[in-house]
Image 1: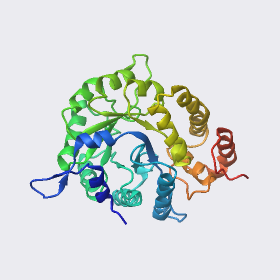
Image 2 (image 1 turned 90 degrees about the horizontal axis):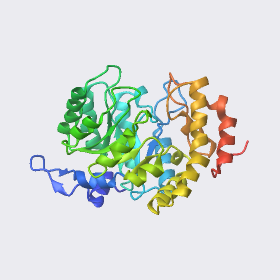
Image 3 (image 1 turned 30 degrees about the vertical axis):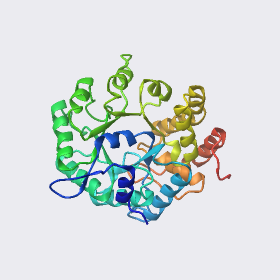
Length: 342
């Protein structure tokens, strides 16, 4: 089996030798260039036992399904242990274990980002080192939640992760859970070489902040559209696109990136309306009337196309019995292949 570190060398991301450690060091510009296409938030599957322990075999089987469906280093990056990956319900050791499983399963064929959201700078430093050691190329970092931190707090937080290892960093603007990242803060992030990407969403208050960030900073950072304005963001220079649909229909994601590359924007918008909008509407309905969280609908969709799957860990409740048939119908109407009929 080819290890992920060998894959990174093949991608040209580790061309230099670190003078002190003798280890290969990250080429941040090449890491930025590889941060493009479908940004796939890989759900964490759990075993059907009392502890709901991570199902490593199921996770790796799902990764192979994504690869067999046409996702590769030319059109995708895999995020492991993000919100859809139940990071907030896992221990530090579980987060590392799951990330390692995804890195191993990709065999260097797709760059991997590890979710590193935390409320602790000390833990972020540990996550930064661990991600680099296990072969991930990126970590995804957000402003710490719970407290309303200042921008200087966040700047020092990101700097600590950068100082801890030469992992490439994607800054995620989770303004709905923590302090939002301003234009001024983005400008300060340009001084940290490790920061190569922005996973971006902005409050929709009519000031076009989302568009301005892409327009002003797309030459310095790879921008990942987290607002599903794929046509407008691609025109402005975004290079990555958050897509849950890939988890149960990877061919759709590969085709979407091809449409974007060809600037066939009518097809892109039609696909967003036909396939993504129904998924998001159902997710919104579940959030309003039953439970909160992330990744649970991805996993139900995966189950309905015959993939290994599971519930999410509590406090998110199990939606599978409550919403199975409605989800099945949504998939059929959206044209999703492989749907298991009732």
